[in-house]
Length: 326
Image (cartoon, rainbow, N blue to C red; front, side, top):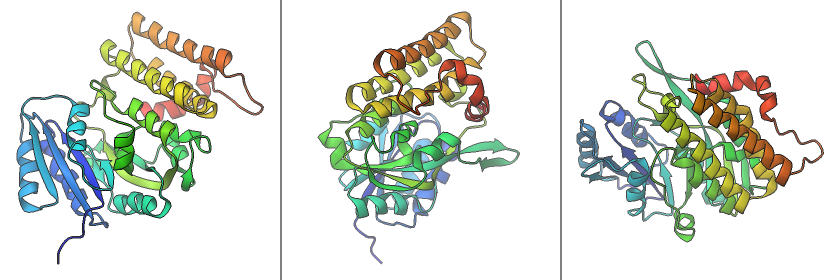
């Protein structure tokens, strides 16, 4: 039986993830929505990642394999894939993660029904355990970004969606990317600026109140988020948080700025303060928290019933921060 015309392209970047790539690509093959194609971008891997990608492309015409001769970074790999998209919708899957079987059915199906620009789903972490990996519960801020399920809301209607910043929890309209000339920046933490720009400019947003991806926290500790005590990585974290917030301040409603600052002060600041930081890095985190409080005081006078969750209240959310950083 011939495959249906693809509705969505899934961009799968990978660098030295041969150990996990087959499981990621098999999760695409297992989708209940068959109308997809995938662009596999080997970002100059030195292990067998390219071989895994090539094998899947030979076996299944829905996979297209392209290679960077040398590593250029996650953002560049995603951008390479974006240049090749010719379907109505586009999504992402990192080559060491797992897409749940109904993910594309839920995300694409929602956009087909509503005409929204973006559909956003939940995700869970795949944590290492003896003998393999197992998913953890959906974390509170991920749940808040998607529950209850919504159809055709604006950022002003649902500002808490701004806590869902990862590229691979979403499917969006390809024309939206082209109209707004969206591309991923180079460097670490590529998702922050793109996600907040998308939310601020979207005509309408859908949310899916169930997980669509398992995000792997690798046992070998190679994830950037597992090295945030490194001064260079910490500086990148703070820069990305600032950049995303600056976009919302320029382009989004005040309620979204308030929501994002509250999220950062409740979750990110306590998590970073709990790291084993040198004196300079610790001061940088404290200064960042003070900047956020100043924005709330100077630019966003409190409204009735609004709680910012300032840095001085961070102890109330220690369990949430611990859950994120664990």
